[in-house]
Image (cartoon, rainbow, N blue to C red; front, side, top):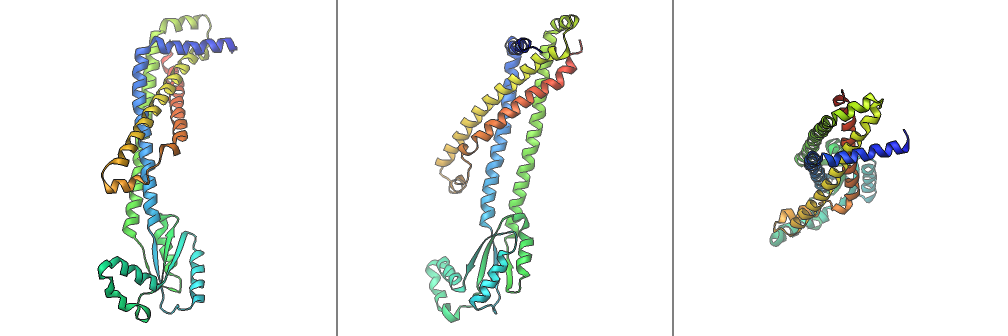
Length: 303
């Protein structure tokens, strides 16, 4: 195909967008709404994942050292064994003196009741506080730690870990379902737009076929039209999501709620994801518009 012919067909696709501007505006409006929902779902899932990751980092295994481990050499050897376990990320040794002091501070004004247990009267064991890399392997990691000869007991926040994993799983599944449904809806919108355009140009297409125009020559303007519909919708949806997300972030930063203020610290700033979000919107818009047009234009081009 010559460059001049290609340029002509691209202009025809853009012209068709304007000629059928009412239908195009309706299609863009629905596509923008779909993409806003997709973008909002993606940002919501990203923030939930970030918050869950924070709480995962706060969960830790507490391993109590056996009473017969008393020397520093034995403690160092035990610490080395703990570091060889693959899923461990951060290991902190807490002596029985430090543990008792923490309890005294937690009791506040009644902490003096525990002061008599300091020194030789301290019956608390030494312990290791261990954070893991993958919370889904928490129980397996705890079993490996408990199997070490110098460990007498291991405590893990099993219920919290299961809750966090369930939240992450549910959010991921819902996000996939929402995106899949909206993609199907978007493809149907593109198909209907192309169908109406083909119907309006039915006579013109028949004449072009009679004079020997190829199917590719006839289809290209429709593909360009679908691509432009998708790209315009993507850019508009991106701007709306951008403004909406900034508004929500500003509102969350000023609302008088302690728990929301705590969560706000772990919200993902828009500056951290704007490039990826823009690329994703454009790729989705161009993909839906061009692929949807190529799939459906052949079906409606039987003239």
